Image (cartoon, rainbow, N blue to C red; front, top):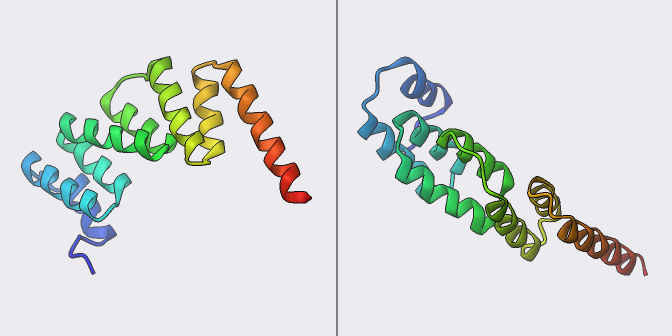
Length: 130
């Protein structure tokens, strides 16, 4: 069992108290160690800890997680390039996270990959029914 704060305490640390950025960064790292990515992002964002956000951004790409990817981009205050969208789309595709892959390819306007993915989904659906 982790010794991370419960929801109420977390909200207090993030939004009520004037928590020093070093403490926020440290807590974000603890959440990250517990694989609580969304919580880590909140702490890194509040601490304006770009290095932590960039690290988690790479983790989101590697896991093919478009939702975390978008949350981190928002925290960083930037948009993803088409190349980044295609990269996370390819990773999501490799991990069979088809909804995330499709969303990423749509964001990059990669018609070729969207069509290929739709064909793959259709073929897999057909083979499962056989």
